[in-house]
Image 1 (spheres, rainbow, N blue to C red):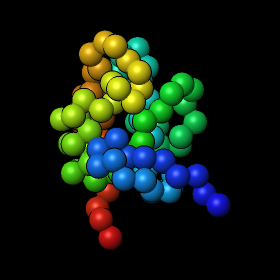
Image 2 (image 1 turned 180 degrees about the vertical axis):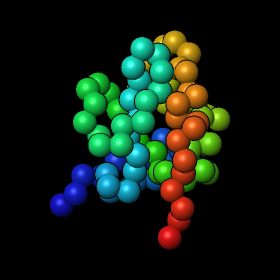
Image 3 (image 1 turned 90 degrees about the horizontal axis):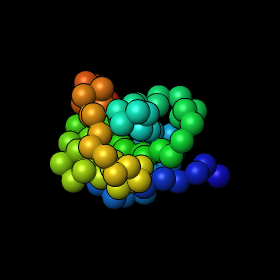
Image 4 (image 1 turned 45 degrees about the vertical axis):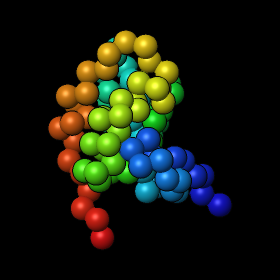
Amino acid sequence: MEPVRTCVGCRTRAPRSALLRVVSQNDTLIVDESAVLPGRGAWVHQTRECMDAALRRRAFGRALRVTTQLDTRNFEQHPPRNKG
């Protein structure tokens, strides 16, 4: 059985393979495509709606337990996956 994670954008549960892992390194939000970077990770659907909702709600700071402002430029440049 595959592990299940919660999307920080829409707050729905999904299999780990359907979500994108994001970590914080030096107060910068880094996309972890292979899900192997060290540290606490946050999971989000790779859709524009969930990615925007997570940024708008500032969900990454809470999920990653970071108290400083995160630099999200790297994450914002990551292209969403098309549904389907």
